[in-house]
Image (tube, rainbow, N blue to C red; front, side, top):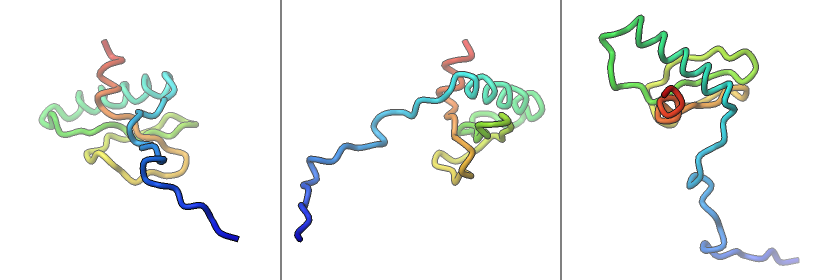
Length: 86
């Protein structure tokens, strides 16, 4: 049996659309980021986002754009946090 070979134009780029993130996670990530900024005022403009646990909403500020995450974590980019803060 032969497998059909799909041409590259048949594939869709999964990264082209941002992932949908629960608004509660975005709010929790915003609180984590806000607390971090208050505790560390000397560090500005370096954060990429927050890695946050989906079940207990504990997280940490991340400084690279494509972090390695645990299975129960998701990454909330800083752009998404800032758009929901105001």
